[in-house]
Length: 229
Length: 138
Image (tube, rainbow over the protein chains, first blue to last red):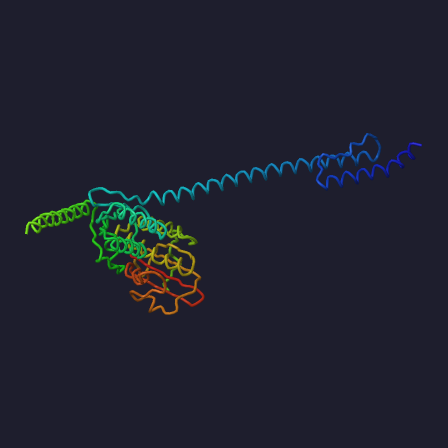
């Protein structure tokens, strides 16, 4: 009697096992057989339930880890964004042009002069020249450790374009080692006014200023005379 | 090309971006300083490397730099090898002459670098790549 009962149930229960397995396969991790009968088949049913439990745990663990990795990744991406942002900020920061005296601009250059930085530096300088009407600008390269042909080329271009706007550039801060290197490279910087230190450049600029002032004064002095005549 | 298995490799760096040029340059300066080279020699060798790497980056898109210390002709030397697998140089004599440029530069890169170091060896094969070895006595 009981055997017969079991047999009739077997079909049903195997169907149930199949259903549960299909549900789990489809992604429903809460599905369990939860058999209430106790017989030979219940062992298999319990084992399957256990397996599903383990699987659920594994999957949950994996999800958790994946989430952690994703979190870390997004954090890194955010940091990278900050770094790029800071680099851009630095680019702007690193080429400040300031008016230090009547008619005199100073542009201290620090670090490496790549094409992008030179571009920004040149733009800042040219804009400031137009804005202030200064005719002397000092490019101080004390903070540039290596002057290769590319840097020299960039400097030449900057000086030439400043000249087109009517401003004379003085390059200062060339160390003895860099001076020798430039000569060996064969770069001709003789068209540019260069000074060893920023101080020398400032003195030169002041003298230049005085000369132009004198000329202005002279012309002021001559002009009234012309009127009298 | 001069080469010796007894050279001690001090460092190497792959060149992939413009930033790597700066880092490789700093590496060279660091080892030159470590080998007790004077400030003028440090600057010279660093600038020479800068020229070579700039060429590698502009024409070959990248490459590799290796820094050695060792004996060349029984003299202590800093040896730097820069190699790329770029388009190569067709006419080495022309490339080594002052004022010639195939790009946007001033044309003083290679000949200038040669003048900055004590020995300069270049090997190039079209479509295979270019290797430059520079040697500076310590």
